[in-house]
Image 1 (spheres, rainbow, N blue to C red):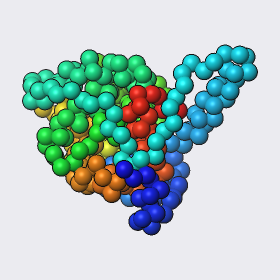
Image 2 (image 1 turned 30 degrees about the vertical axis):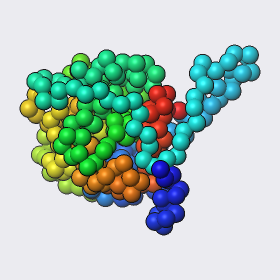
Image 3 (image 1 turned 45 degrees about the horizontal axis):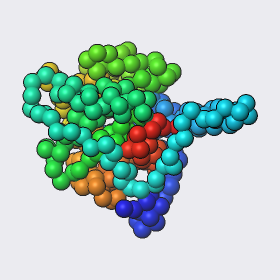
Length: 295
């Protein structure tokens, strides 16, 4: 298994922290999570606060020693393998059953959720998407941990709305509430310009497109890759099951075999052409494979 450094050195990829060619989007001065192929699209902006979170986490950890208390949990080092590990195997279920098939994975997702701090509903959605993808695109080999890594970076699994953590949450049906809608892709500095393509159907904006939902799809991408995964007959970018499967669809179609370093890297660059983004997704996915939270 390769590391990020190995792959980039072999292919002469250039590290860039300016997420200038993304297609999903995040709300920062540089373009972030993307997902469709639009260049430099913007959305929520979770990445802008990662450094702050890491500093706060480290300070809290250090202070625990100063007063004689041991850390609550010793976390394992994050491997830099590409692709990241597949994590806890997803048990087989009938993915063709009526209704929301991810519900049948909740018993599997519950202990992982307890260890990682991710909602059981989101973990089940990622596992369900991986199972469906395995049948639909058997050559792909996408792991639920990769989807979880993207979900973490994009919106903290449907809980970060671009302004505050906990600003949204997944309701009992897996719909991000209030809806997570990114900034207007109006061509502002560091932001792609994408005229409205959905008449405001998904993003409420009839002038410009915006990235939407837990996995931050822009409407143009959703038309191409959107899939129904919760059995209601409607592909909804705001619903976590649908969004996770649609992300798998995009990644599998663009990356081919995601069990290889080349395939995984190509797929992630199709989602967001940013080296920083790729590393953040890899690290989050690797953490979930170890059944531990991302810090």
